[in-house]
Image 1 (cartoon, one colour):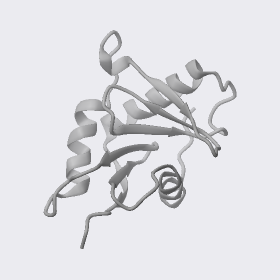
Image 2: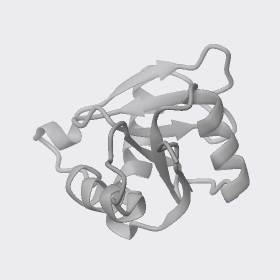
Image 3: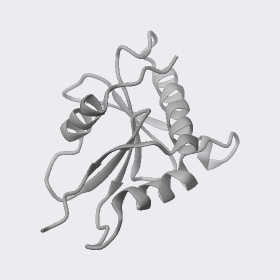
Image 4: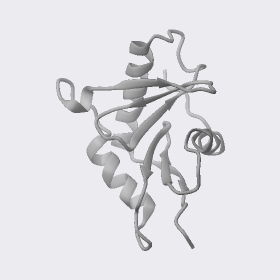
Length: 131
């Protein structure tokens, strides 16, 4: 079961994870975040993130798109699951799973990334470009 966090909770969680003022990022409904380190001044951040997630979000078993790794957040709570694109990350909260093994966390995060990669529902844009 995938628990949807509110846009406000997702934005706050990713602000805590992505520290600093230099990286713009976009969050999708199931907790996947696309980091845009240098998007350029006139780029539509949401559109760029959608393009990236459309390509790198869906899971294809037996390919690099099925691979994942996990990072335990310190300070917590929760984990970040990463895959085959360095700037596509998915948050997994401790209330979403009962098994906190890397495998269980990774599979859950990969499933969330897959859903976001198909639905492409942007819920928050954090624009950190110089004004």
